[in-house]
Amino acid sequence: MIRLVIADDHAIVRGGLKQIFALIPDFEVVGEATNGNEVLACLRQPPFDLLLLDMNMPGISGAELITRVKAHQADLPILVLSMHNEPQVAARALKAGANGYITKDCEPEILMAAIRKVASRGKYIDPDLAEKMVFDASSSAGKPLHSLLSGRELEVFRLLTTGQGVNDIATELAISNKTVSTHKVRLMEKMNLSSMAELMRYAMQHSLLG
Image 1 (cartoon, one colour):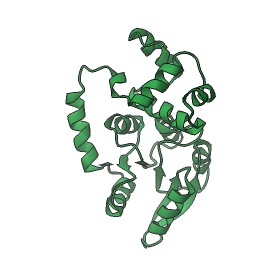
Image 2 (cartoon, rainbow, N blue to C red):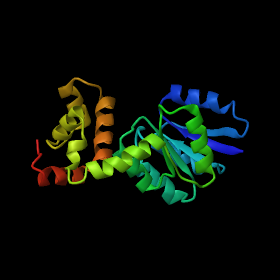
Image 3 (tube, rainbow, N blue to C red):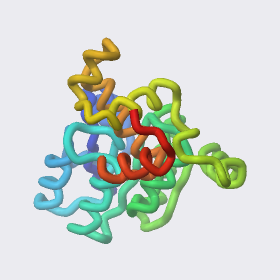
Image 4 (tube, helix red, strand yellow):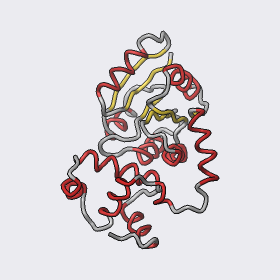
């Protein structure tokens, strides 16, 4: 029996996954989490076999959350199930300690195979994403990290360098706070930055201060 904890802040995603897993005789969902703090709380509950983790949740999330989970329970297999298919995001998650990475648009068969492989202490990366990671490593060599950002992510990046917070940026761009937070997490992941201090330092070094 593979005992799973599903960590995702979208109820419809958790519900859909539970419906799928209910059809698998040797899968059992023993816990759910909607944010980073709840994930860490699950580590204090009875042991389970695999953490199925979304990269973007309220509070602690992404690579930072993976690092914290591993600090508490180094041998816990973590499989990231994310909407992000960028090689940089996957690489950062794996570097932080994730044992596998697949995207939410994968087929159920891929998800099942990944869970079984990671739960048995193996590694799993979606084949299409693995191919992108290999070619991205060679094609992006020498390019500045901010060249990986989308137009809106670069816009948010520049506004962050002016000292504006998420609420201010949301007002200026006429988008929701959650959307700004998502862009912020994604650009930090793509650029391999872990704090605002690192972001500001990068902006200064590349003359990108807003």
